[in-house]
Length: 242
Image (tube, rainbow, N blue to C red; front, side, top):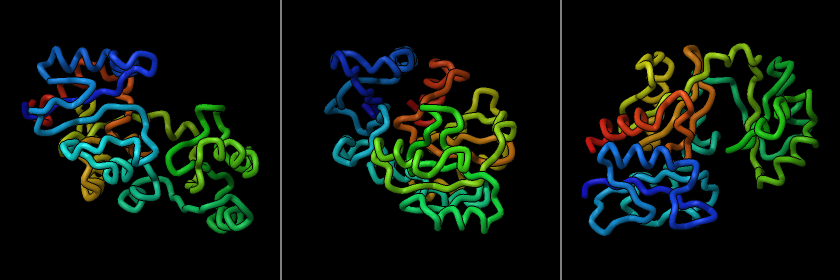
């Protein structure tokens, strides 16, 4: 067996694939791609599909996984991948706390608003706009971020929602870029070229035709509703020659 996709198990029933990935796992099997909840002895390479992993001790130690935790984390923590896409995305600086120095730097840059993101998570899943300063205070944000163990912050130039309306997810799998309509903006091609230095076998780039918004590791990224499970499976089959 050349390659096998390993899926996270359901939190309530360890004999089942996690509900988030069930349709996808079925599509992979129907496409002839070996899948399992645990690695087979005869698999040469392993591809992981799981929920977000924040600690190295929670990442599988098997050396056959095509991405190590270090590589995975390089596409998760913005401060690690930002230097590779600087100039292709929103202007960003970093700080280990939100205080007067951060406010002064925002003002020095001439920004009226800033989007404050934890290194690996924002607050938009709690409330839309909760990550936007000065609409919400640093103290309020830090109160939420502390619950997620965030201790490093990405302070980003704020873009109005209208500029993000053409946001799409592009998948980079084994060096090939995929999207359902096969239209790949030049900014995405350039980002993928630069991000290849991090060594990831598969990851996602969220971008408009004009700029990159963020990057995410392929292990834990949503395929997005616009991409059917069958289409997603065909990309992996093509990219890895499965």
